[in-house]
Image (cartoon, rainbow, N blue to C red; front, top):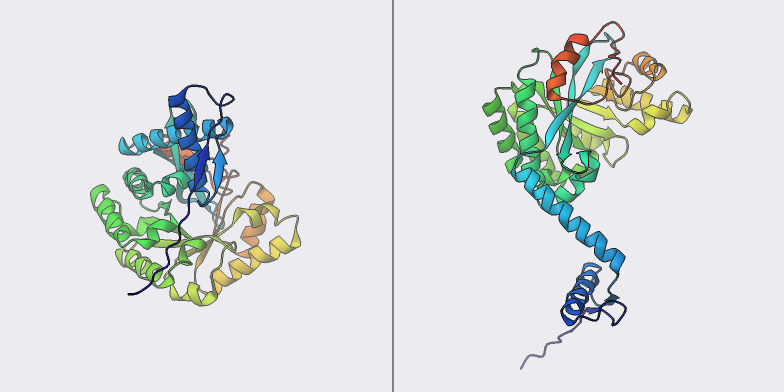
Length: 319
């Protein structure tokens, strides 16, 4: 008879009386919450009930429930930040940035809910709803203006992404060449072959592909050459320091030069000062985005903003 080794382990949650509670039913619930924390931290350990952590957990559960409801009701809205052509000073398009109009918290920025949406499996539905709204808005803009939409790295693990983009373009009537899909370098790491296949399927639709935050991730030149990108975006951390830090200026110059050699456009994020815009233009950077040119605005404000764009310097003067 074959022998087998069975390894057993356990996690333990502890609630104490009288400091935690003296009510038996409450004691059991709090011990269960402590047990859930022990399991969440890897198991094989014990944890005591902690009122502060319990409050944080309940707040997170409430926030998660509210986010699920907001996505199901399609309540998240796109805001649009201008992207300027640095050579001409003219408006080139907009990047779509997600916002959540929360009834109690006000307008919630994406850094507070995107990671949660990824954790709980909402990111695909969230992205589809925002993409549809962004494309519908952009379809009414002048023909030359582009709209850029960020895609989560998790979506580069699914073959349904290109199909979803195709469906949205067909529904909204936005020509594919006016849509830019932005991907981060980190999105290409886990399964490069799969990512290349999905990026190729997006390119086949005729949309433009942008590598976001270039220089902060792990892309090799071989990988960059193997993918069909149209544009590189230079991370704001380099742009913000480039007029004061020679090393940052060199990095920006190197990325612009790389883009030129590969026939890729370059766009700098985080442009907040005219000196930065001037330095970028001298380097040959194609586009700029940041508070110097305008902060994100809701879709209904975009037509006014388009009318107010004032070449040759392109500064929109928004607060």
